[in-house]
Image (cartoon, rainbow, N blue to C red; front, side, top):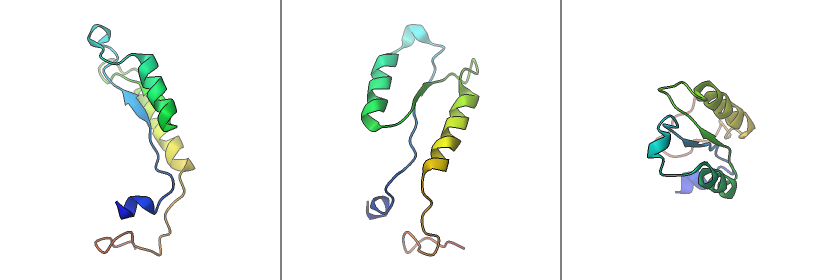
Length: 84
């Protein structure tokens, strides 16, 4: 837990998957969007089977990573880490 406290922002994207199985849906898009708003992160729905929004998801992940500050590379986050 201490390691997580060192970083102020961690990139998060909330993803609803298997959007192609509409009849088996357990969470509505509005519920997903509301949770994402509570968490302060983007929300996307995808389907690997139908290739829906998969490329857009990876692009959003990269965008979120670009907004996150990098940790100080001079400091190891824990005794087990070796940053070179």
